[in-house]
Length: 113
Image 1 (tube, rainbow, N blue to C red):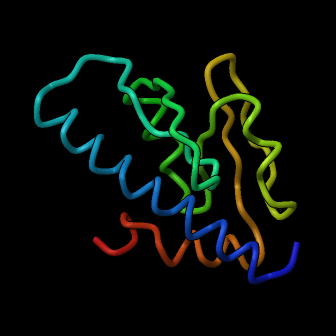
Image 2: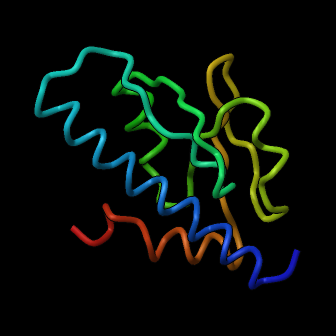
């Protein structure tokens, strides 16, 4: 996978992360009880899978701007610059490096605050 492809995939993942940040914001506003439904952040533009995380799990993933959560099995579409850092029955957490990691950090909405 070349740098352009990695960057494009990271942009897709960051877009899903942005949407999930809005879901999290609304879940807090409405005091939504755990677990909260979020969009898979696998980077595949056609993916519409939902996974549920507790607020604590979500915040743990968001502790690093290079981390994303996926529906189990979707790690197969992840670029080679990603490393699996956590796997549960309900979700997989990946961490991006290289060009994709740089894009993920740059697009991290929590870094802009």
